[in-house]
Image (cartoon, rainbow, N blue to C red):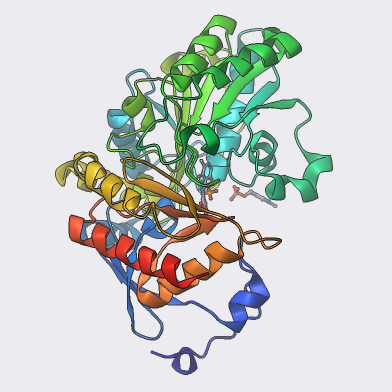
Length: 442
Ligand code: PXG
Ligand code: PLP
């Protein structure tokens, strides 16, 4: 199929996080997908190095998920979950609770990571209020953090371009920890850097500044994905956990990318052995086949809110029309079964050493200033061109697509997060294409 046959009028669709005019003048259109590969509009097979947008963890168009959605669509298209219910939402929540860390067994459904973040922040506020500590309204995020695009999420987030146009309208009581990347100290580290655990002590400084009694929660990505793959220093997350415990502050892990097997464990919480109080997820929760997100909550937090109100009255004034949507829930049940039956999280753990070796083999290529990895996530940081940040990575991204691999870039960082069904040959193919592209782009 060529562009002429596609006959697409691209005017109306205002594309998200896209250079609209540049894209529409030279579009990259995907028309099909199966397993590890997309098909482009001109009929080329494109290896998916990014699981779509870090979300198609079981690979594309898996029969089990497709069939579950088909069947659900024909049987019960929609049912409210406000004062009503349908079986699949309860089943999906139970399946999620099976793989969350012990004690985080209550699940609130949303439709995206952004909604999960705003939901988690609101649960934190509601929890403190239910316990008579309603003055705890401050949130601590982190520089370079990505927590989606809701007003809550961009307020605790730390990516400047996502904030600056809206800076007058952000949540009023937010502070930020420093990010943990230090290329001078830790360039080309394989896995977690040994440098940087002390950066968690900055939380003590912020607690002293604001007073613990004003702080509701700390929110971090256990491994920061969107900003360009920042791997947490050894011991860093443990320290954050200790400091939060000491001061009665809730710890929220934003696991929208790290959840559902990306690191070779169900969630980063288990991978790092650090249990948060709330955990956001989305993307891989149903293999991205229908929009869905969720927040897993400690049982005690759920109980504090649910038991605080009058019997028979709504306890938590929050929810989305599509919370637990039947198609999304059916897809989640099928995806979670697939992850389990195919052992995909274990597969990711097994492949991680090969992935690490493959990505670090690009170290000597021109303009490569750092390579970072953990599980099946990797980042390659390039030297920016003088006065043109992001241009080099953009050209490499386009070249990779032309050569048959979909990768992701942010600024001058290339990011990789293949579906967990990837094999060693495909990992080599991916980084072979990336290496060629890096060599060809000056
Ligand atoms: N939190 C985290 C940690 C995320 O990675 C969100 C929240 C928001 O999720 P939604 O579903 O509202 O997009 C995300 C999403 C990229 C990229 O380019 C990353 C995300 C989304 C789109 C692109 O790295 N992360
Ligand atoms: N705006 C209006 C006018 C609505 O009626 C609703 C929901 O009923 C919303 C926004 C919120 O939509 P959703 O529940 O899909 O987030």
